Image 1: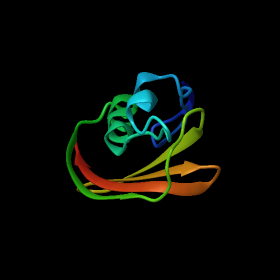
Image 2: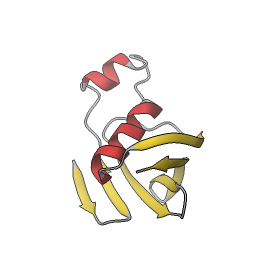
Image 3: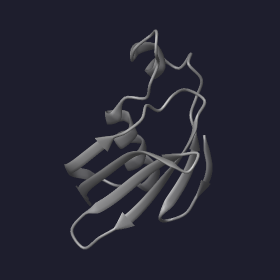
Image 4: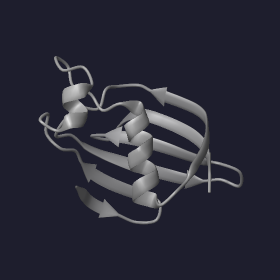
Length: 97
């Protein structure tokens, strides 16, 4: 569920552990798969991710958590920082359209 969104950021509340995504990805330790993080990003901001140049997943993202996407549009790519409780959990640099 989107809590707050503007052109460069979005605050998102994830579903609970009963969601099929979490049931399929490490049933005994449900985390959000990195590829779905990218799908969520492209869907929310209506972007087409062409190429991932760098991806760093620092901490797991779990059910019921609230995460924040912070986007920095550059001339040739996009830098995305994902945070939970003001702590960086992922960073991605990608080409987009």
